[in-house]
Length: 365
Image 1 (tube, rainbow, N blue to C red):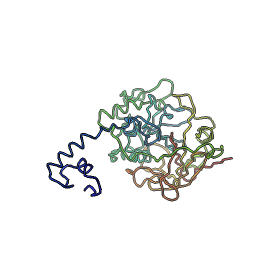
Image 2 (image 1 turned 120 degrees about the vertical axis):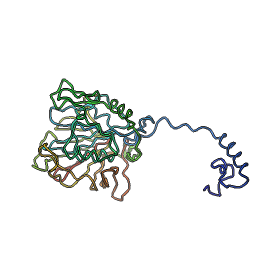
Image 3 (image 1 turned 90 degrees about the vertical axis):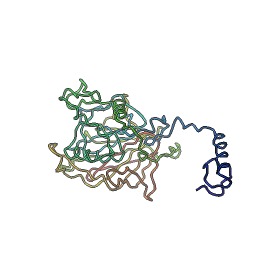
Image 4 (image 1 turned 135 degrees about the vertical axis):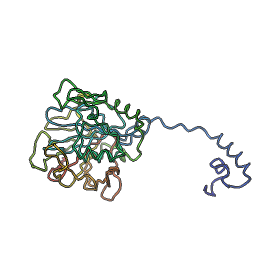
């Protein structure tokens, strides 16, 4: 019902025959005149990107998130291609103390992404939380089985078509000649979205977003500093320095240059180091052995459903709060200590999922 305080013309223009007073014929006539007098409203061509907060073409902002699983085995899989174009990257352990990435693309595309590898249970949960198109090459037995029960994920598995370790059997994925099998499978966000379009699976999901704010002015930014993350295999806790992560904060650019194994983390497509605007550390309970993983040795489960402590690095400062994903179909959310959504800076966000025994430390001068 339209409030009685609205003026008669607005009332009539908004709803014909809605009982704002007068005869129905008068209301219909007034509504037609009122509606004809309203200018056509053209939707904006650009919107704030839901995941990176940057000005984004409307057609890109209103599409489905696309998640790709990328490997990080040293040195065979490095440098990876396409990470710089991702809106968000989630990093955590796979097995044997080796980390793996889920790169989530929404606002931008990359013609080459990889090397693409297999999925795990917790990657499936995040893929469902973003209601994403998920591209991967197989997975643990339980992770593969779970995908059949996640209707919010459009599953694009290279194994569906693969003919051999040298023939993917589909133009959606290809193997490069400059790397050894199995570290040489690549894809393209453009090809994957085209396939999703053909299957009517490239729709928008309006809960896939992070809150954003204006970056702090130079005078309100923190000093230069570093964030250090050490990933330990929970089944045999020892540090493998190849997977040690460090971020160095640059006060002038308000970004965090990423290092891996002591060297700048370079994107193969750009030849430049990765420089996210935000680093989020999700602290979880301990990783445990995955009894239903199948033949993959030392597979683990990481408790990423529920909630836990989160650390937010923005503007050269650190803030403590809470991460939450209520269930495998719920969106991933970040809150401050008061339970309010945390606003990130526009730009790329790296989410470091750090199970108990692994550590995150920081130092700002």
